[in-house]
Structures are given as C-alpha cells and as structure tokens.
Image 1 (cartoon, helix red, strand yellow):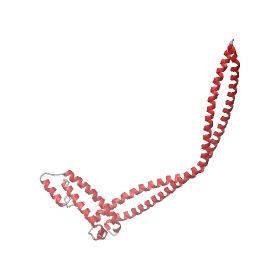
Image 2 (cartoon, rainbow, N blue to C red):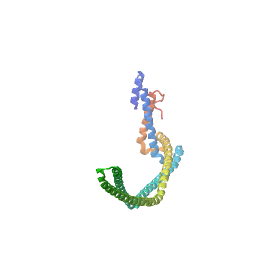
Image 3 (cartoon, helix red, strand yellow):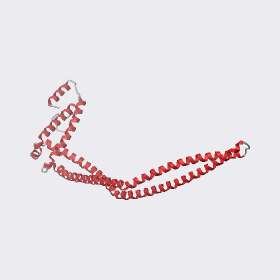
Image 4 (cartoon, rainbow, N blue to C red):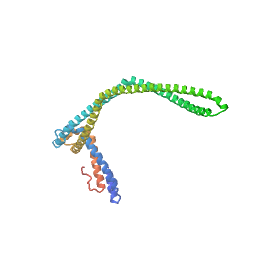
Length: 296
C-alpha cells in the first residue's frame, strides 16, 4: 500500500467506509513476503558480517550449521552413489542369473513340451481302451445270451467269439502302450525335477552373491533417510538465523558495520522498507492500533 492510498482509505474511514478484513488480509500477506525477503537477504549477505558484534551469535551458529549442512550433503551424495552402484550390481547379477540358467530353462521347456505331448497321447489311448472295454463287455453279454438260446441265433456265436478275442488282443496292446507311455512320462518328470534342482542351485549361488547388494541398498536407503531428516532440521535452523540477520541488516543498512555487506542488495532492502510501511498502514486501517510509521 502506498502513502496516497493510505490517506484515501483514512479519508473513507472518516465517512464510515471501512474494509478492515481486507486490510488485515493484505497485512498478513505482505508480512509473509517480508519474512521471505528477510531470509533471502540474510542468506545473501551473512558471510560478510563476521565483524558485526550484534550478529556474532547468529554468524557463528550459521558457520557451524553450514559445516553440518556441507557434511550431510556430502553424506547423502555418497549414499546415493553407493545406492546406484548397488542397484547396478544387483541388475547385473539378476541378468547373470538369467544367463546362467538360460540353457537349462530352454531344455526344461522342451522336456515339458514332450511330456505334455506324451500325456495327450496316453489320454487318447486310455479313451480308446475304455471304448474297447465297453465293446468287449457288450459282446460278452451278447455271447452269454446266445449261448443259452436254441435256433438260428447260434450261428452268430463263432463271429462273436472271434470279435471278442480280437477286442481282448486290442485291449492288451493298448494297455502295453499306455504302460510304456507312463514309464516315459515318469522318466521325463524325473528329468524335469532334476533339472529344476540344478537351476535352483545355480540361482541360489547367485542370490547369495546378490545378498550383499540388497544389504547395501537397504543401508544406503537408511543412511539417506537419516541424513535428510538431519538436513531438514539444519535447514530450518539456518532459515531462522537468516531471517534474524536479514531483519537486522535491512533496518541497519546505512550503519557502517552493514553498509558494505548490503551494498549489492540495496534494491531488495528498499522493497523490504516499502513492505514494512505497507504492513504498518494496512494494520492501522484494520484497527490494530499500529502507527503508519512503525517498524515491523
């Protein structure tokens, strides 16, 4: 708020026109901007204020915190480097796991495919054997009926007995083929199981080798989290000190002890002075009793 707008607002208030809530809101927003400007100013010039006695506590605390900040930042970078190296190592080991068992996995898949094909063939044989057995049982019942009858039906006995004998032979052949396929499938299953064990042994050896990478990743993540938490505390303390320094040098910018340190930041200091005046005027218009010329 400028001085002319302040006078107009005071004039309006004399006639009962007031916007107290708006002035209070403006004062709060501008005060927030002023605090941010104080922190920026303190951050920019604190290193040049070693000889200012009034700021010796803030200066030397900042020197200590700056060292902690540098140390923590370096630790985070170090942990990030370890984390990246561990991730790269783990990725390499995982790729090595795949490569080391690729031939076995390919062979295993071929055995599984062959086993599935033999199982399908055996299932077909079992279905055919059931059909033959059903036919055999039907002819056996027919033969029993014909054997007890007299007349023309007896002429079919020889043909029925012949077919029944052929079905018995067919069933026996199917049973032999089924048993043969079952043995081959069992051999394949055992071979697949042995191959699974070999694959697992290879992978286990590499997983044990990769365990160190996983442990390094976990430790690096913990270190990063811990350092970031400490860094947050340090940054918060530094920000508070920057604000104190910025507030002091802005008010005492023309003092001999601060003139050189603030020489390059005059524009910012002028803006901060205008903000202080505006905050004071808005507070006064909001009925907070602040005099327009008071300093924040």
